Length: 413
Length: 172
Image (cartoon, rainbow over all chains, first blue to last red; front, top):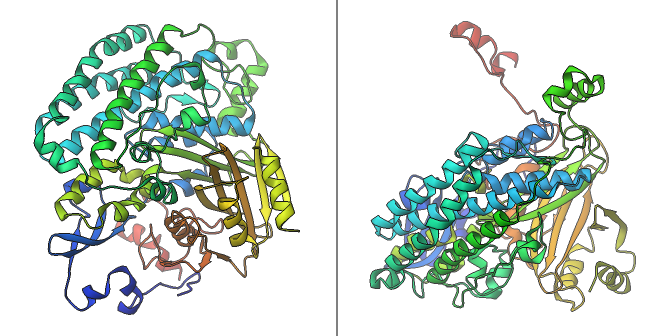
């Protein structure tokens, strides 16, 4: 099956036989195509499901419908101009992607980030985690036919998007973090807006929980469904709430703290059974922990610069250009050529709402990277779907896809 | 446990397997030979000093026009010792084949398919080596550095004659 440049890979039935069981070839089981246009696949995911009656024999995910070549594009752009591309990877958590990318470049350049910028980054990524979990909860509940939760979740998400609009001018594709700090300092009224949100949110989270936690329909659809053991979850590289639902205590924020996460107190919620219900409870509890982190960061938010004064990675302030020749040169060099990191390679991982989001950058010493690779948590987590779904009912498939919280933009990149 | 202990353990077990040890920004990269890769990975996963149960990421790099041209990176993470380690295997352009590690970490399955799809590096022993992101009838491997970023320029004309004259098939 070797293919070379200029050749087309063609398949015969013989070469695709291994995807389904022997019984399917004899016509004893049914092959069902789900997607790519199907509302419960959360994007353009296609699944080839083999069914024995209503029981799932195997699931073969087929991805790539949303492939946009982001990694290829990165190779032709300067380090600063890649930031807007990272927003579009996981479009439900652009802040986390921005953070992972700029921190990888900072590691490559050896740049120190001011404490104020680090704290604001923590506040915004935790808000992003809540916003992302709200979308997940709303759509997940909608998939299992609980309509009202969706409306409530999107109401609260709007408040977070308003805060994002306030700081960055954008609701979703924020591109707010820069190498060395932030685009701008947070505006007046930011702290009040976040405080108001902190005050409102705990009661709202309790409300979502009360709607679902003891709802008999919800329990029947989620308890004991889509179970994955801790050993399987680790072997298949599952990260984030899907891993912690199985009881494995791995959170990048705790294991390898970045952006001063070690300054804050928070717990890592864990599940026990690794089913859909436990993943649901882990995410609900994570939202509460995020509120705790935001509260602490806001109370202790230091004063000071919001971006590093290192002129190699940040452009000088506009007013300096009027009187400083050096600033003018820096400005010109930064916006035309960009900056050149030393040759080498780094990998930096952050805990995005979906799991370990890693960025690998390989620099050849020029202003453009040789290679940027994004380790997308959804891409890896989706691989475990066949393990979770095997032996379940076809109706459970929808609940399981919802519970691993995939974003197709991130899977296909 | 530290990375030093891991390196010592590998040295004691596999003589000559480590071609180079690179320290950069607090990250350790071990350049290993292709022949030792699978055995070394199994050792790294199972040995009590290492216990790298978690394959975080697998990705390839194209060093074109330098030689050797390709490298495959394995980003390992040890949950019990909280360590990260990068393995690196260099491959020649004429022979872009590397043994698959799906037998050790099943999660490598899709990662290896992605690398095969976008770089054309083949993984020996992979259970299902097909394209994953691109359509089956796609020609070439786009993440290779000599693959053009733009095949057809964006056209800002409504004149079909002009548009047609810019199409790639005219040049052929």
